[in-house]
Length: 190
Image 1 (cartoon, helix red, strand yellow):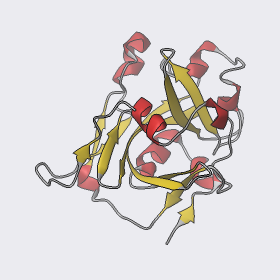
Image 2 (cartoon, helix red, strand yellow):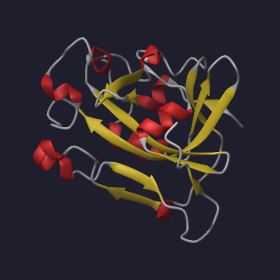
Image 3 (tube, helix red, strand yellow):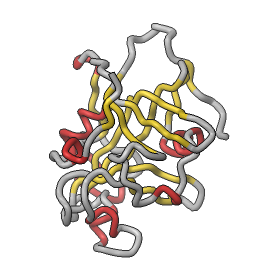
Image 4 (cartoon, helix red, strand yellow):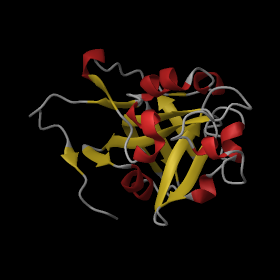
C-alpha cells in the first residue's frame, strides 16, 4: 500500500502531525528516478509565538509560504550552505511547519537535514511545491507501523536563541534497538 499523504493529514496540529510523520516516507522524483526514505526524525515549529519558528520575525517574502495552506514545501538555505526541507502544517494563515531531519534509505541512515536534502536533490527550487499532488516531492504512507515505545522526544537542535522555546520537546525520533545492526550511518557529506 502506497498512499500519498493528503492535505488533510497536514492540517492537524503541528506537534501531532510531527509524531505521525515518523515512519512515513519522503519520496523524491528528480526526473531520473525515485528515491524514498523512511522518516525517522522531525522537528515541529508552531506559530508566531514560537521564538524558534521563522514566523516569529513576522511575515516576509521568505516566510510567506508558512502562512499558506498545509502540505506545501518550505525549503530555505541555512548558514549559507544547507538547504532545509519543511512541510507546512495547520490552517491557511497560521504559520507552522515540520523540519525533516533524518530518514532511512536503502539500509542507510541519512542523519541531518542538510545531508538529507543533498542526498534527495532537494533545493529551493522546490520551495512552495505542493507535496500532496504526488509530483516531484511527496510524503507517503506505506502501511508500516513503528512501535510507539521506540518514539523518543527531545528539545529541538540549534535554536538556543529561542530561550524557553528551545526547551520544547518538539523533536521526535524513532530509535532503533541498540546493536540491531540494521542501520549504517551515511558519513558522506555529498
